[in-house]
Image (cartoon, rainbow, N blue to C red; front, top):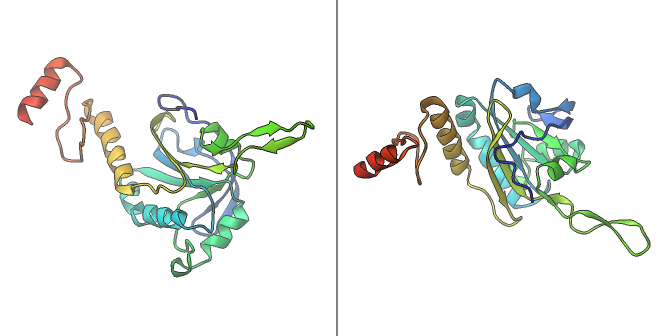
Length: 210
């Protein structure tokens, strides 16, 4: 498992479903550099149980991400055809109909591997044949990427553990507050709270008020 915080987000170009049903063959994150923050999240598989709850939760808050200039992008190791099919299934039947942000098809598994969230790896058996040592699907990884393409926040959960979309929004707010004000965000900081200057005097001043 690699830590990408502080490093450039790995580039990729892959098929994706955008706008809830349009398949494109060369989706990439480079198009957002210099323009938008990006929230890229990985999920294990289409047509499962926890995954649709997460995809719908991000869709429900999509307007709030967009108001902050953040592009939300999902990714799994399923094919673009699988993504498209799942998007045609109503929410009441376990589908993700209504999800509008891009869903990337990492069929080669190279994107998940580059981001350090691929569960399993390739190896060789006693006969020299290549085998997979795990399920070869993505953990629940989440990466907040700034406008320069640098990973600023990273979170990885095991399969059973769904993420908190409000926490993802809080991290966006914290990053943008720091970018705009040059002040850092203490524990449990939320939008509207005071930040503090990254100095001993700044910390002391903050603590004296809280």
